[in-house]
Amino acid sequence: MVALAPKGFAHSLVLYGRSGMWGLDLQLRSLSPKPGRWATLYVGTTKAIDLHVDPTGRFKVSSALSYRKAHSWNDSWSKWQDAESLAASWTEIAQYIDQVINTVILQGKHLKEGVVQSAVSRRGGNLTMLDREGVLGFANQAEKDRTLRRICEPWLKAAERRDPPNWWNGSKPSRQSTECDIVALTHTGQLVTIEVKPASASASSIAWSPVQARQYADQFQAWINQDPKEAVSILADRLAQQRRIGMRSERSLPILDPSRPVKPIVAVDRRWSIVARKRMRAVVDHYEWVGKPLEVEVLEIDLIGRLTEVHW
Image (cartoon, rainbow, N blue to C red):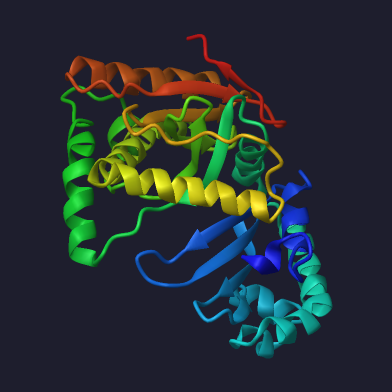
């Protein structure tokens, strides 16, 4: 998206995302297989603003209704227009973004997990981050339902047990997990799906996070298996876009190796409780016992993004 490039009218969104402050993060989106792209500026886990571009090169911005009502929003910004027209309004739009960021910071509720996600995105060891809140697209709802049922239901059914502890049945997942916190590549080209958990999450939510990460990995594995060459091309294009707009400065970037299995990871805030740790261990052990090992790597993360191995 040219508007986000260093000389583009919306490059300030990139600068926000690279600032490392308040869980700010910029992510590129697409409507594949439908036309159209957009970029989302996150504050923690909430959206501050979306910048959209259509196939003809027109732009518009969108934001949550609650923020539009509370701050200096102009409805003309949400109408498709050429780059020059929206650029003329960008100073006012930037002021609106500042107001939204300030509101989210003061509320605090969207920052807990988002700060940890942003930390992983900025650092993450040897990982190159591709996307946050990654969701795969499908041709239609029927295909989506059929595919997710095939991939996810076996993992959900395997959670059943005859002698569960008190916390088990009331917290075990009953719905498919479809929105991966972070999608990344290792330096050797292995795709990884990461479920991020802040220490403030409930012990049971943290406990079941390996099952979420496993479902994400299987979904992205199915996507790669469907057309490995296209998957390589799409991810390479995503990284190239990020470099063009200044989100990345690396001279060399990893390329997806479709022969390597997608790896699920849980990144949990290192301040997590002993109760959460014991419950996660119980979940992992149960899946081993029923013959469906999750094979998920669990890592601890600090607030500047350093990942370390968990010692049970």
